Image (cartoon, rainbow, N blue to C red; front, side, top):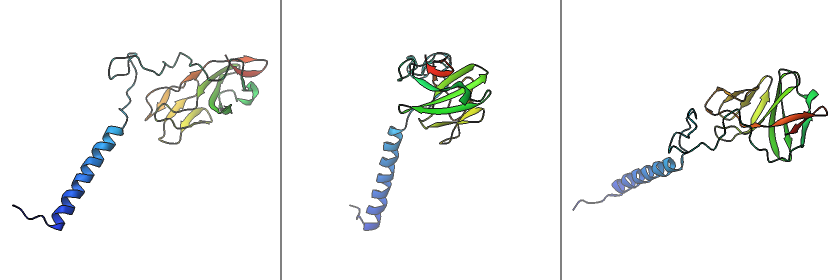
Length: 159
């Protein structure tokens, strides 16, 4: 029988702890995101839970909720608002044409900011086109989730 020394016990035990830690961390890691080009999530063939960029998502805010005055969004620029705890990004690509998106990054859920003429996530560097919410630079691969808005009485409101 081999004699178990203190050194071999520490070495063997340390390797076992490191190995099991790596397995636990790997098990907790999310599956990598891939572009949703075929309407499936790319893993089990089921429909993606993230809607395509042209279908507005339902806002948790009731229809008619005022977000901001149209004049507060520069033409060709962006703005951000928080209404009832909901962070929303807005853009006015052309005068009178306003679009809105959830300010939650589709990469890992960080808050996205309105920066001049685009939306930027400071957590991992994703950048999004203001007019469409499309990804300009990753690691995000999915566009921002759009929110249906309309203009009523000079204000941008939830549609």
